[in-house]
Image (cartoon, rainbow, N blue to C red; front, top):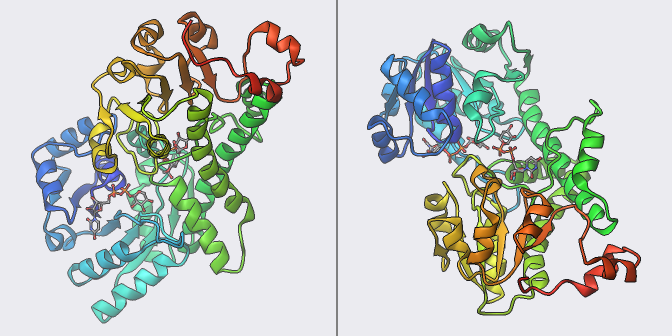
Amino acid sequence: MKIAMIGAGYVGLTTSAGLAVLGHSVICHDSDKQRIARLNAGEIPIYEPGLAEVVAAERRHGRLVFSDDVAEAVGDADAIFLAVGTPSAPDGSIDLSFIDAAALTIAPSLKPGAVVVVKSTVVVGTSRRVNGLIARKRGKPDVSVASNPEFLREGSAVKDFLEPERIVIGTDDVRSRAVLDEIYRSMAEEVPIVATTTRNAELIKYAANAFLALKIGFINDVARLCEEADGDVEAVARGIGLDSRIGSSFLAAGPGFGGSCFPKDTRAFTATGRRCGAPQPLVEALLAGNEWRKTELARRVVTEARLAPGMTVAVLGLAFKAETDDVRESPALTLVEVLQQAGLSVRVHDPRAMEAARPVLAGVEWCATPFAAAHKADAVVVMTEWQEYRSLDLKRLARAMNGAMLFDYRNLFPSEAVTAAGLHHVSLGRPVRRPAAVQRMFGGRAADLKAVAAPASKG
Ligand code: UDX
Ligand code: UDX
């Protein structure tokens, strides 16, 4: 099939490459001419494992080309995917202006019978509305609009495209159903296809992300309880996750969820609920809880490490999760803001995301290695679960530091290893460890023990 992609961002680029692997002929367009020039020069503007290799191979085979000419890209296409951004509007709903603009831009160039496929995450009813927009612009209803939501996790997006757990196809007419079936035909034997209406497809996407985010919010709340009740969230997560009704994934406690999808999609889900007169109180509470957690964990660094203005904190990890350079709504950004408001100097390191973070972080010191960031730092906070951090030489880190507090907000290190390096380990959802004598004095009650927090000096 001849396919056009509008938008060469994380989703559009990965999907273009994936569709080419399936054997289709793909022209990927972006309104950002510079982005297309970079792609044509063989440069991949984002970090996504495996993507550069697939893009290079598909370009070599002639199945993937990049074009800054929208009419050329869509003119001969059987299916035109829209993968432009859908940012949050101030009231939490989503801003569909890029979708509308893209639909109106391509409308005059579409060939009759073409199918426009909405890949961007959009609120229920958008595909139908886009159908109306295009028909009005063309003066006749001779193209169809379908919905085909993405479930690509950044960091494993290529694999998620090529080995999906399901494909959701939302169509409201036979022609678009036939085109979408043809696009995914080579996968249909192995992968369940959920063929439904465009409205259901749009709802599935939001419900999926809201549910996954609820799992994370839940385990983060359980982590807090474990801290206060001398429990261990990892034991609890394993104990509940082995129940197949619950499932073990997305139960890792962390500093709050971020990224370009969960925060935005859960906000849009609640805004849609309110608009439709069907409020979503669970997700409303989740959103408030996630914001609270990001700020609370940042404040915990200041109070538990007893930091005073002028002292220094090293932040290891800026990306919202490992294996991506994406910092959109990353909890690390909230942390830096809170630390700076407290008058602290902040030194940052990330193996991949420093370039993306530069435009959104001011007044920090950019460091080339974790040890450079930790140099004379009064506390170190690990925010992203990079493999490089998991195997960090903790003794070397301790030697570089001034203070002794290691805030491990991804539970990367065994407590024994941190303690052996002479550092005080603050991890998530694990019992608060204090010297045995103090434990006895307070009968082991973590809440009381907090009152006698260990001093923030080394040794
Ligand atoms: C995608 C989805 O589209 C979004 O709805 C979903 O919630 C998250 O994933 P993403 O690929 O991450 O967004 O967005 P981004 O990396 O910002 O890429 C969007 C691209 O579209 C940009 O390169 C932008 O230049 C391009 N664009 C935007 C167009 O080509 N045309 C436009 O009219 C607007
Ligand atoms: C998400 C969806 O998973 C994917 O299907 C698609 O709809 C796009 O949005 P992505 O945003 O790339 O993918 O990342 P994801 O792996 O879902 O993580 C989102 C956030 O939750 C990250 O901040 C991550 O650190 C956090 N998270 C995830 C946890 O804190 N604990 C977990 O167990 C899992």
